[in-house]
Structure formats: C-alpha cells, structure tokens
Length: 320
Image (cartoon, rainbow, N blue to C red; front, side, top):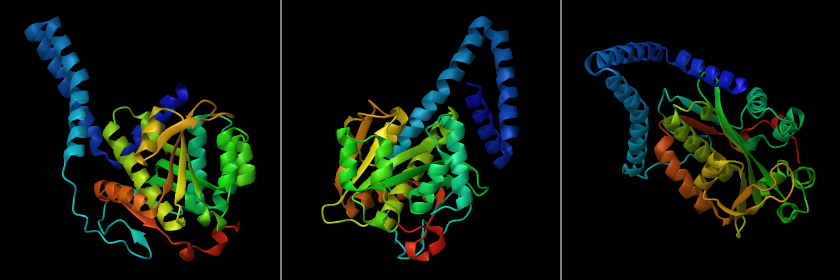
C-alpha cells in the first residue's frame, strides 16, 4: 500500500512539474470549495454541507461518463493520411505531449524494467533476462514517454515458433519452457507466425482521477504496438496469430482493443487459471484497420517514430 501511495505521489508531482499552472488551479479550486461549504452551511446548515459534498462526489463521474460518450460519438476525420515508406511519423504537428520511438534506446529499456519492478514488486521481473530479450529483439518494446523522458507506460511482445506455442496452450509447456525453447530473436523473429502480447502496463492506473487520460494513453499504446507489428513482421498467406493473457479486467479490456477474444485458460505457471485471448489468421489489412482507427483519434497527442530494420545499426541487434 505504501509503495502504491509513493507511485501516486511521484506521478502527480511529475504532472504538476510539467504543467505548473495546475498548482494554481488546484489551489483556487480548494479555496472555492471551502467557501462554497461555508456558504452552504450558513444558508442551509448540515443539509447544505451534505448537498455540496454529494454533488462533489457525483459530478466528476457524470462529466467523465458524458465525455466518454462524446468521444465515441464524434464523427471520425477523413481517411486522407499518407504513410511514409521509410521513417514513419504520425504527423508534422509540434508540441504533442507524448512520444513513442521504436526501437527505444538501451537507456529507455533499462528504465522500463525498473518501472516494472517498482509496480509488480515480485520475482516475475528478471532484469537480466528482460534485457537479454530486449537485445535479441529491440523492435518489440514500445514505450510511451513525454518530451522530458518520463515513462507513462509500455507494451512488449514476444514472437514464438508455432509448434512450441501450441505446447504451451496444451499445458505441456510452462511459460519458462516456452521462452527457453520457442522464443525467436531478430532476424528470425520477423517471420514468426505467433505474436504474444507479453506486457501492457499503463502507469496512470495509479491515478484514479485521470481516467480520460488513461484511455488516451491506452489508445496510443495500441496504435503504436499495431504499427510496430505492421512495420516489422512478415505476414504469410495464412496470416499470423495474436495472443495475450488477461491478468485483470484492465488488461483484458486492452486486449479487446486489439480485437482479441477469450478462448481458454492458462494451465500452468504464474498465470494458471487466467484467460488466454487470441485472434488467429490475422492479415495485414486487419491490423491496418485497427491502426487507422486509433491513429485518427490520437496522432494529435503523440509523435510516433518507427525506424525500419535497415535503418537500425547492426550493433543494436544480436543475430538470432
């Protein structure tokens, strides 16, 4: 509980440091709230105080719900966006609050692992193994940052040989067995037929008052991840299979944004009993539809930069 409170405070302080005007807004809001309670007490007594407190509790929820409905019902923008064949950027706008660069730098990868350790507080995070996985395939780590390099969330995916992943689904493999025997490194990873969404972590889940921002960040992570898969993975005629494990309701909701549905439960290991989500036989045009949907909504909020494999220095990637 103490660690969660520390993380909440850290994120709130980072938010205020980036937007100092929030300090003035919060201060004025607090003063106004106190004056409103005093006036309500003067006019109506205890009933007035209860009315103000009740409205304070209900109003943010109503506004959030209405904002969510409005964001869904707004007409979508024109489809007239053009994808660059080389260095991919979302648009030419400046001053966007978020940034995603794929592949990320080694320093960012280290920061991501430290963040994951702070959040999960368990033996599930092995820094040495995670960095080994990053060096074997840096194209599969997607990190959401701002211009000051603060990390707001990340996703990573593994690519596996289909036969080994089938053994995992049947319960013959634990996940450690799957990593040891079926994980593919670059460049073999680019031809993999199974893509497994391993981690989807949005650090803003620690701030309950930022639900709309959380939805935006989730959408950006989905857009960036799908864009990376489209750029780096080859699609055979039968398509590729996309998998993920729904560890909680939030994770399951994000997996559904990728178009995945539950098909069975994990039979062994730390995730035993959790739902496995999948969509099989995915073709390039299927993911292009998802990318276009989230790009329209979020490209004005995030600069997305994806480097082609040919543009990345060979020393960054170890051969598979």
